[in-house]
Amino acid sequence: MILHLQTVPPRNGLLWVRHGLKVLRRKPIALIGLFAVFLLVSSLLQLVPLLGQLVVLAALPLVSLSFMLASHQVLQSHTPTAAVFAQPLQLTKERRRDQLILGLLYALSTIAVMFLAHWLDGGALVRAVEQVAAAGGAGTGKPDPKAIEATIADPSLTTGIGLRLLLTGLISIPFWHAPALIHWGGQGVMQALFSSTLGVWRNKGAFALSGLVWVGLTFGATMALTIVGMLLGLANLLPFLLVPLAMILTTAFYCSLYFTFIDCFMFGAPKDLPETPITPV
Image 1 (cartoon, rainbow, N blue to C red):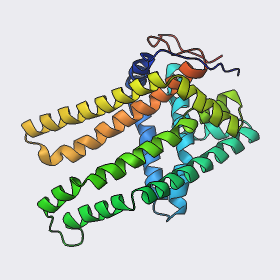
Image 2: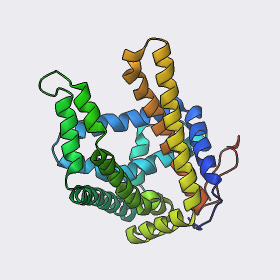
Image 3: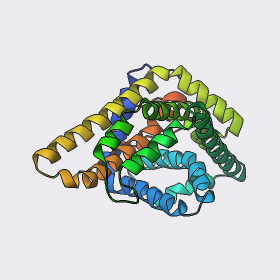
């Protein structure tokens, strides 16, 4: 497939969010079920020290591509299944190899970023987390609210989290479109990483707006659910209500990735989802 790098207006970032939500609305059970499968498998892999965590990190680019494929299937009026996770590895031997190399590079880059952040903040975040755990009564069952509040207010905690988010965001740029560029465009690993970086940079306004909308939507929905829960006297159930909300919004975000790709490299995201299926050409 021939791909063409395109520049889109910043307002298209809002379009990506809308389309991600609309795709989820068409097949909510199937799509949220896919995300639940990913969470379950990830949790099981986490039981294997080091190796399991490495596999989970390496799988993330493939997971993002799988949700692009799932979104495409929904637009074709099909119901995606867990088989979508294997599809990125079933085209050709060369593309399978490149996808696996890409995943390994992502895992190693993420680990390097964590070590770099730990070095830059002098381990402040790790110490803050340990202090929160101690103040929360870890091992004693006696939480200390004042100690928890003081630790959370520590600037080193905010700085450490912000530093890691910034570095993680930076490494996500070359990997954002790379799996799709390998899958649909047949590009090699290095070319896909370069093309992805170029695509994100040329459309940085749309990506910035999309990111702001997702943050605002998440914050707003969380606050609304919290307020309603408090008014109804369901404060104790809030953790159980916030988990499904997080799954819904995260799944919608993964669905929106398909539209960021077709807008930047293919024929452009439609202003509204058509009644008839869209087929990449």
